[in-house]
Length: 191
Ligand SMILES: [Cu+2]
Image 1 (cartoon, protein in one colour):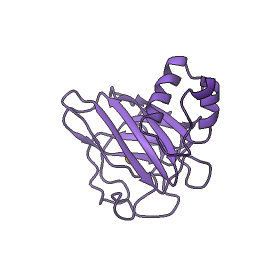
Image 2: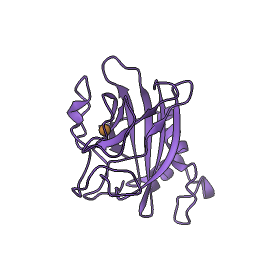
Image 3: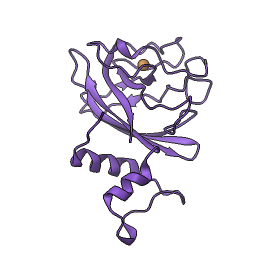
């Protein structure tokens, strides 16, 4: 069971809501709506993963997943990456980051039995566009995914795990993208 600190909750809300302006989206503070009501309105639509480094690494960060219609908007903020490098990222099958090398998360989340690939072709539901670290080893990216969901169902990302890899994803090598070691892991929790 997760207990979020107020600071973390506020950060999540700010990240999750930046750019969500669809007509059916929750309103912000109108008519005296408080934080509790705001949280309740997001139930089942937002999930997050707090990344912790695997042994020998210092990669930390936060992924927020926001259901927007048929798509999932992802906001990733990650630090401790290799400067100016690309890092493969995926949602992996098991929501288990207990192992020191991240292997407890299993293979890529792939409920549809598809090959690994780029977003524009057939790909695992857990495949995501790679992180691009800046000169400080920080990545701050937003992208959308078509296929997986935050909402409950066979393609739901909740209770699976985000893995950040040491190397780029070639989007070709099966079934991993040849992205190298697992340098951070975070279980995806619903709100
Ligand atoms: Cu992976």
